[in-house]
Length: 396
Image (cartoon, rainbow, N blue to C red; front, side, top):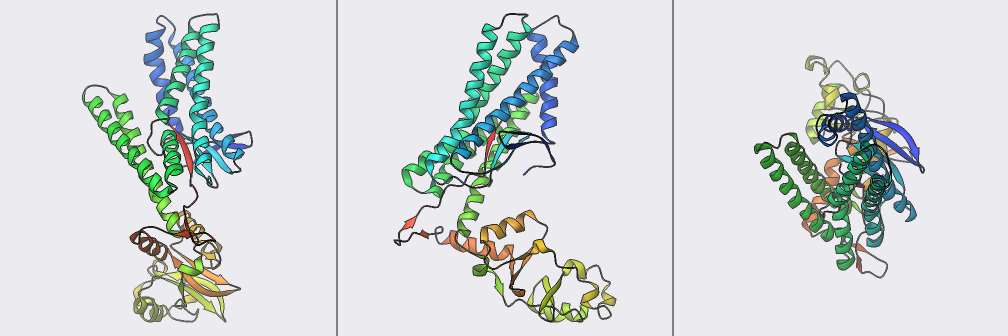
């Protein structure tokens, strides 16, 4: 999801990271505050004073976003869920869950924790602005941080998935219906409506002279649109693979190549004959390498009959080797995360199959065409799948 991120520190056992894209929004905030907000609110100060105030305000927003995500993470930990870390990026922050809430109640309270923290921070900053004596710069600075935290809470509580309010809405719908997929579809639909509204408002504002503010609003709308649709599609993918192992979906008895086979025979007798682009290389019953069309293309066609597979193949990448007992969901994650297009299935040292993204997506397509996966319990009754919550987002 993100580009390069930098680890900053650990807080309450959570790794705090910052994505490279955050520096862009940080620079925009400093520029906007130092050239517009603070000069208008506190006229007559030196330019360096405005820059210093803008930097402090930006760091205050930085800390507020972290505490917003920490609140999500602490409640998730209370429910026994693991947190992969907290990352700040262009559109705000994200707390990454390594596992999913098991019921609507935990989904509800985890989602609500972030806005509750932002409202608490807004109250603290407002009380500070009112109570702390001193130069006018302190009330203005604290008032700004109070306002931005209140806006953060209110925006995130919009009932549009995947914002926190949309996750609260999904938890409520899930609790009422017992159907997570249906609840996610409705909450995601609300997110799409909000996204188009934000994009339309942003375009109108830009065309009416709103400048960068309108453009930023349109970008946030586009982010909400892609995140809402992507989160729902991810849920559909995972639900379609629930309860399945690699052994259930892999292509068994895969076509193989021998190291002493010439490349021309590999192409004619294996790849073209069976319409496959990836072939494990086996010697004496053991997996010794792999070869695909990309490697074959590095050899001039005139040399195909002169070169053997052993001279072209690459050693086996252990990230491409999986067991038949691996869950289909984990296999999908492996394919999505890594460069491999296919995985070799090995059982007790023997190649027993090959798994491709096409195998997984084909199964998912059939499941969706039949109305979704069924997950029977021991009594034989269909049960709703447990909640999935890959992340919580907060926008500045």
